[in-house]
Image (tube, rainbow, N blue to C red; front, side, top):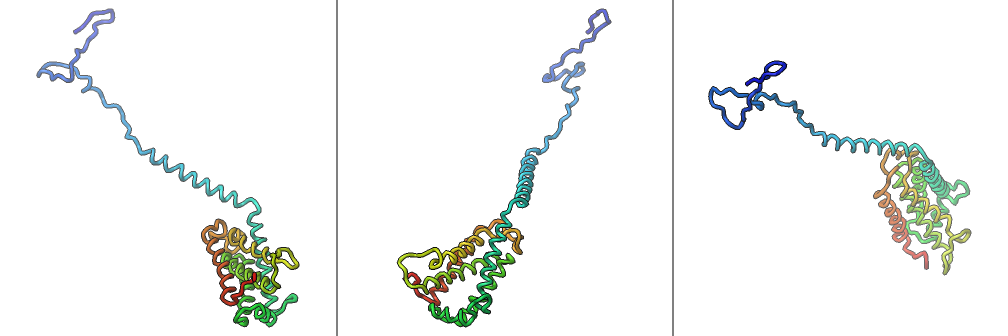
Length: 244
Protein backbone atom coordinates (compact mmCIF):
# COMPACT_ATOMS: atom_id res chain seq x y z
CA UNK A 1 0.00 0.00 0.00
CA UNK A 2 1.31 3.44 -0.81
CA UNK A 3 0.41 7.01 0.01
CA UNK A 4 1.41 9.88 -2.21
CA UNK A 5 3.18 12.80 -0.64
CA UNK A 6 5.60 15.52 -1.39
CA UNK A 7 8.58 13.24 -1.24
CA UNK A 8 7.17 10.39 -3.15
CA UNK A 9 5.37 7.30 -2.20
CA UNK A 10 5.78 5.93 1.29
CA UNK A 11 5.49 2.21 1.62
CA UNK A 12 3.78 0.84 4.70
CA UNK A 13 4.55 -2.69 5.74
CA UNK A 14 1.44 -4.51 6.87
CA UNK A 15 1.46 -5.81 10.44
CA UNK A 16 1.33 -9.51 10.91
CA UNK A 17 0.51 -11.04 14.26
CA UNK A 18 3.29 -13.47 15.12
CA UNK A 19 0.90 -15.59 17.19
CA UNK A 20 -1.30 -16.30 14.21
CA UNK A 21 -0.09 -18.59 11.55
CA UNK A 22 -0.14 -17.03 8.13
CA UNK A 23 -1.84 -18.71 5.30
CA UNK A 24 0.43 -20.25 2.77
CA UNK A 25 1.42 -17.83 0.13
CA UNK A 26 0.31 -14.82 2.18
CA UNK A 27 3.04 -12.21 2.34
CA UNK A 28 3.82 -10.87 5.80
CA UNK A 29 6.55 -9.25 7.81
CA UNK A 30 7.40 -10.63 11.23
CA UNK A 31 9.44 -8.22 13.31
CA UNK A 32 10.34 -10.84 15.89
CA UNK A 33 11.63 -13.15 13.21
CA UNK A 34 13.74 -10.47 11.64
CA UNK A 35 15.08 -9.00 14.92
CA UNK A 36 18.64 -9.95 15.66
CA UNK A 37 19.40 -11.07 19.21
CA UNK A 38 20.83 -8.46 21.52
CA UNK A 39 24.36 -9.02 22.70
CA UNK A 40 24.32 -10.84 26.05
CA UNK A 41 27.23 -11.28 28.39
CA UNK A 42 27.25 -14.33 30.57
CA UNK A 43 27.45 -13.12 34.22
CA UNK A 44 30.62 -14.16 36.02
CA UNK A 45 30.70 -15.34 39.63
CA UNK A 46 32.11 -12.03 40.77
CA UNK A 47 30.51 -12.18 44.19
CA UNK A 48 32.64 -15.15 45.20
CA UNK A 49 35.86 -13.45 44.09
CA UNK A 50 34.96 -10.20 45.80
CA UNK A 51 34.15 -12.05 48.98
CA UNK A 52 37.55 -13.74 49.06
CA UNK A 53 39.65 -10.69 48.25
CA UNK A 54 38.85 -8.59 51.36
CA UNK A 55 39.81 -11.49 53.66
CA UNK A 56 43.14 -11.80 51.94
CA UNK A 57 43.73 -8.06 52.12
CA UNK A 58 42.74 -7.90 55.79
CA UNK A 59 45.06 -10.80 56.61
CA UNK A 60 47.89 -9.04 54.82
CA UNK A 61 47.15 -5.84 56.72
CA UNK A 62 47.15 -7.71 60.05
CA UNK A 63 50.54 -9.23 59.27
CA UNK A 64 51.92 -5.84 58.34
CA UNK A 65 50.49 -4.32 61.52
CA UNK A 66 52.07 -7.00 63.69
CA UNK A 67 55.44 -6.56 62.03
CA UNK A 68 55.20 -2.79 62.45
CA UNK A 69 54.30 -3.09 66.12
CA UNK A 70 57.13 -5.55 66.65
CA UNK A 71 59.65 -3.04 65.30
CA UNK A 72 58.67 -0.37 67.81
CA UNK A 73 58.75 -0.08 71.57
CA UNK A 74 60.97 -1.40 74.31
CA UNK A 75 58.97 -4.45 75.38
CA UNK A 76 61.51 -7.00 74.13
CA UNK A 77 64.38 -5.03 75.64
CA UNK A 78 62.63 -5.08 79.01
CA UNK A 79 62.05 -8.83 78.76
CA UNK A 80 65.73 -9.29 77.93
CA UNK A 81 66.82 -7.35 81.03
CA UNK A 82 64.35 -9.23 83.25
CA UNK A 83 65.42 -12.61 81.94
CA UNK A 84 69.17 -11.96 82.02
CA UNK A 85 69.00 -10.39 85.48
CA UNK A 86 67.23 -13.42 86.94
CA UNK A 87 69.54 -15.83 85.14
CA UNK A 88 72.70 -14.12 86.37
CA UNK A 89 71.49 -14.18 89.99
CA UNK A 90 70.61 -17.89 89.81
CA UNK A 91 73.87 -18.87 88.12
CA UNK A 92 75.89 -16.86 90.67
CA UNK A 93 74.10 -18.57 93.57
CA UNK A 94 74.77 -21.98 92.02
CA UNK A 95 78.46 -21.20 91.60
CA UNK A 96 78.62 -20.04 95.21
CA UNK A 97 77.14 -23.31 96.42
CA UNK A 98 79.16 -25.54 94.12
CA UNK A 99 82.61 -23.90 94.15
CA UNK A 100 82.44 -21.41 97.03
CA UNK A 101 83.02 -18.42 94.72
CA UNK A 102 82.27 -14.85 95.83
CA UNK A 103 82.21 -15.73 99.50
CA UNK A 104 79.98 -18.78 99.08
CA UNK A 105 79.84 -21.70 101.46
CA UNK A 106 80.96 -24.28 98.92
CA UNK A 107 79.54 -27.71 98.34
CA UNK A 108 80.36 -29.06 101.80
CA UNK A 109 78.82 -26.11 103.59
CA UNK A 110 75.76 -26.22 101.34
CA UNK A 111 75.28 -29.93 102.01
CA UNK A 112 75.52 -29.37 105.76
CA UNK A 113 72.99 -26.54 105.59
CA UNK A 114 70.54 -28.80 103.75
CA UNK A 115 70.94 -31.44 106.44
CA UNK A 116 70.43 -28.89 109.20
CA UNK A 117 67.19 -27.70 107.63
CA UNK A 118 65.94 -31.28 107.50
CA UNK A 119 66.40 -32.39 103.90
CA UNK A 120 66.96 -36.09 103.31
CA UNK A 121 69.61 -37.27 100.82
CA UNK A 122 71.46 -34.00 101.23
CA UNK A 123 74.54 -35.35 99.41
CA UNK A 124 72.66 -35.88 96.14
CA UNK A 125 70.39 -32.88 96.63
CA UNK A 126 73.37 -30.54 97.02
CA UNK A 127 74.76 -31.47 93.60
CA UNK A 128 71.33 -31.41 91.94
CA UNK A 129 70.36 -28.07 93.46
CA UNK A 130 73.62 -26.25 92.77
CA UNK A 131 73.99 -27.69 89.27
CA UNK A 132 70.34 -27.06 88.47
CA UNK A 133 70.60 -23.41 89.44
CA UNK A 134 73.65 -22.95 87.20
CA UNK A 135 71.96 -24.65 84.23
CA UNK A 136 68.67 -22.78 84.69
CA UNK A 137 70.50 -19.46 85.02
CA UNK A 138 72.53 -20.08 81.86
CA UNK A 139 69.42 -21.04 79.86
CA UNK A 140 67.62 -17.91 81.05
CA UNK A 141 70.54 -15.71 80.02
CA UNK A 142 70.56 -17.31 76.56
CA UNK A 143 66.78 -17.39 76.29
CA UNK A 144 66.81 -21.09 75.43
CA UNK A 145 63.98 -23.41 76.56
CA UNK A 146 62.84 -20.46 78.61
CA UNK A 147 59.58 -21.87 80.07
CA UNK A 148 61.37 -25.00 81.31
CA UNK A 149 64.31 -23.02 82.70
CA UNK A 150 62.05 -20.51 84.45
CA UNK A 151 59.89 -23.30 85.90
CA UNK A 152 63.03 -24.99 87.29
CA UNK A 153 64.21 -21.68 88.71
CA UNK A 154 60.81 -21.23 90.34
CA UNK A 155 61.10 -24.66 91.99
CA UNK A 156 64.56 -23.84 93.37
CA UNK A 157 63.42 -20.46 94.65
CA UNK A 158 60.34 -21.88 96.36
CA UNK A 159 62.51 -24.45 98.14
CA UNK A 160 64.94 -21.75 99.18
CA UNK A 161 62.15 -19.65 100.62
CA UNK A 162 60.67 -22.57 102.54
CA UNK A 163 64.09 -23.57 103.84
CA UNK A 164 64.81 -20.04 105.03
CA UNK A 165 61.47 -19.77 106.81
CA UNK A 166 61.94 -23.18 108.40
CA UNK A 167 65.46 -22.35 109.62
CA UNK A 168 64.33 -19.22 111.43
CA UNK A 169 62.74 -19.30 114.88
CA UNK A 170 58.98 -19.46 114.74
CA UNK A 171 57.35 -16.05 114.49
CA UNK A 172 53.69 -15.34 114.93
CA UNK A 173 53.74 -12.72 112.19
CA UNK A 174 55.17 -13.12 108.69
CA UNK A 175 57.97 -10.60 108.11
CA UNK A 176 58.42 -9.41 104.54
CA UNK A 177 61.14 -6.77 104.67
CA UNK A 178 64.79 -7.47 105.23
CA UNK A 179 66.95 -8.14 107.21
CA UNK A 180 64.65 -10.58 108.99
CA UNK A 181 62.09 -10.80 106.19
CA UNK A 182 62.00 -12.52 102.82
CA UNK A 183 61.48 -9.72 100.31
CA UNK A 184 64.58 -10.68 98.29
CA UNK A 185 63.50 -14.29 97.76
CA UNK A 186 59.91 -13.31 97.07
CA UNK A 187 61.10 -10.76 94.50
CA UNK A 188 63.08 -13.47 92.70
CA UNK A 189 60.01 -15.72 92.71
CA UNK A 190 57.92 -12.93 91.19
CA UNK A 191 60.58 -12.39 88.51
CA UNK A 192 60.53 -16.10 87.62
CA UNK A 193 56.73 -16.07 87.35
CA UNK A 194 56.88 -12.97 85.14
CA UNK A 195 59.36 -14.64 82.77
CA UNK A 196 57.13 -17.71 82.52
CA UNK A 197 54.00 -15.72 81.72
CA UNK A 198 55.56 -13.02 79.50
CA UNK A 199 57.98 -15.18 77.55
CA UNK A 200 61.63 -14.53 76.67
CA UNK A 201 60.98 -11.93 73.98
CA UNK A 202 62.62 -11.48 70.60
CA UNK A 203 66.19 -11.10 71.87
CA UNK A 204 66.64 -14.76 72.77
CA UNK A 205 67.45 -18.08 71.19
CA UNK A 206 63.75 -18.88 71.56
CA UNK A 207 62.85 -15.83 69.44
CA UNK A 208 61.41 -17.92 66.61
CA UNK A 209 59.16 -20.02 68.83
CA UNK A 210 55.56 -19.28 69.73
CA UNK A 211 56.16 -18.84 73.45
CA UNK A 212 58.55 -15.96 72.74
CA UNK A 213 55.72 -13.69 71.52
CA UNK A 214 52.33 -15.03 72.50
CA UNK A 215 52.63 -17.56 75.34
CA UNK A 216 49.32 -18.83 76.61
CA UNK A 217 48.45 -22.39 77.65
CA UNK A 218 52.05 -23.57 77.84
CA UNK A 219 52.97 -20.75 80.20
CA UNK A 220 50.29 -21.76 82.70
CA UNK A 221 51.41 -25.39 82.45
CA UNK A 222 55.03 -24.38 83.12
CA UNK A 223 53.94 -22.22 86.04
CA UNK A 224 51.95 -25.04 87.64
CA UNK A 225 54.81 -27.50 87.06
CA UNK A 226 57.30 -25.14 88.71
CA UNK A 227 55.12 -24.62 91.77
CA UNK A 228 54.30 -28.33 92.01
CA UNK A 229 57.98 -29.31 91.71
CA UNK A 230 59.04 -26.84 94.40
CA UNK A 231 56.37 -27.86 96.87
CA UNK A 232 56.74 -31.56 95.99
CA UNK A 233 60.48 -31.62 96.64
CA UNK A 234 59.97 -29.94 99.99
CA UNK A 235 57.20 -32.34 101.05
CA UNK A 236 59.00 -35.51 99.90
CA UNK A 237 62.54 -34.70 101.06
CA UNK A 238 61.74 -32.58 104.11
CA UNK A 239 58.14 -32.94 105.14
CA UNK A 240 58.29 -30.23 107.80
CA UNK A 241 55.71 -27.48 107.90
CA UNK A 242 57.82 -24.31 107.69
CA UNK A 243 55.13 -22.21 109.38
CA UNK A 244 55.05 -24.23 112.60
